[in-house]
Image (cartoon, rainbow, N blue to C red; front, side, top):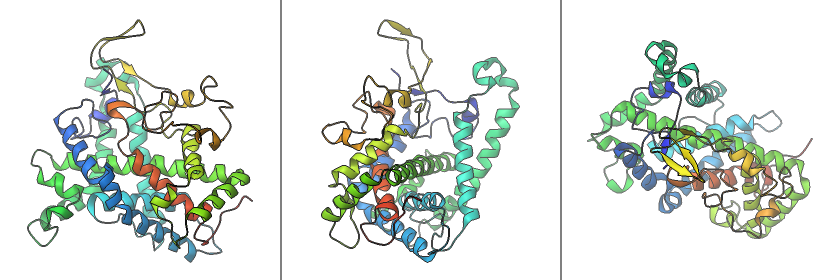
Length: 374
């Protein structure tokens, strides 16, 4: 009933967006199903997550090497984490990095972060025309914003797409087993270059922005709760015996996992989720919801509701130790990634990225370095 999306008009003015989005598509149409299926096979499925584990490990190692090289100097971890996450998803999608993390490139990081923030802001902020649709025919401002954003997205991905197109038929990706996301979407003639570019941009945003924010919040919470930090360090030290922790071993660290879940509860990545739209008139608890109504879920408020959570505003990972509450959207009181048909497909990947990023930067089972409270 609520599987549609309700987004600002500026989004629909972007060329190739109406039916080419995995997260934001207004309808669950043919292109949405195709892209979702390809994304599931290449990125989000259990098999794909396991296959791509070496990418996450390699990119995090590059980040650690960069931080070590800056010993004694100020390091902006948020920028570096963003670049690392961008390289992880870019490698998953296109088998190449977006940034050279080994060499400092602040301008490149911040330019891309700026574009990500711009796309998020412009596609989630409602304007006058969204409340007065009659003005859409004279709404040149939204169209101008959309085209400016479109040019930046095309500049980011257009060259990569064209380079891959020109390499088809050569020695690139000769085996179907080694094809990445870009190879598969290019092989489908029903998708235009604009649609592919928008899909790549959307996946980049989904893999970087909220995960970076959540990772930083987790570090903040652990650093200002030193007893919890020591508890996590002890748990990992007892579980992880190798020089470099693996995802499978970190997943056995239950208190560490609880810390991530509690961070996602207290600092919901998308406080109001992505607005849903009623695809037909329906009745919920004797309330009539007209067709095309915008449905907003206050996930932030639910996650801090004292009716569901004891000491709701307190960071307390223990609340997740003796419960089966997970992040898959099956519990009303805990919806960090949404729920239903349109929930975030990358929730499991995001969870693994967070644990791999936080361990060397804050917990340090490797003994590389530690971030302490001032």
